[in-house]
Length: 202
Image (tube, rainbow, N blue to C red; front, top):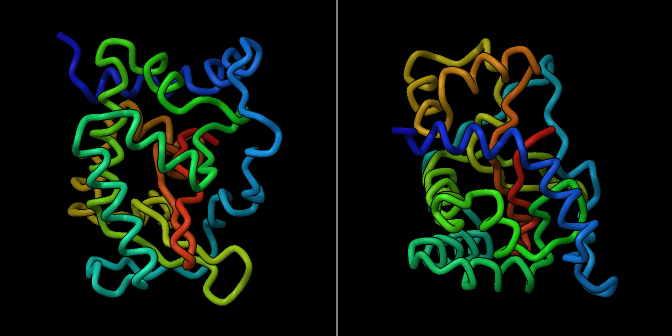
């Protein structure tokens, strides 16, 4: 039997293709609702940059960010894709590098065995992990989960690797090492409380 992490790994490999297919199939959202997130927001930190502080105390989040995180967690914990999709629509959250698409339909297609529920479990796991506060004081300032997004993989401690394996498989980890950085699901919320992205891939 496939484990949930194995299924996630397979789904991860097909995300880009699915995104393009959805755009071609007409699932793109109206131009007025297109995401305004700059590509720099989603960039992976340089491996030789100063290590970001890993924050485990959620009370250190600004009120707007804390409330948004709690709102997302409550919606995801309900098991109702539509509730999470409603937040995506309201915040114009980037969920794919392939363009603007309907969140519920995209996740159902990406995780057909669970009708999309697996992505909600992954979202919860990510947001319950420690975070990093990136690009403080500039236009790209962001609170990002999980902290692996800002960590060189070769610098992870044994305990941090255990945390990473809550999200990914050993195969995923080897592929990330080849790629050069963590590239599984990550979520970002800006200081104003807007959910900016929840993506996997490059």
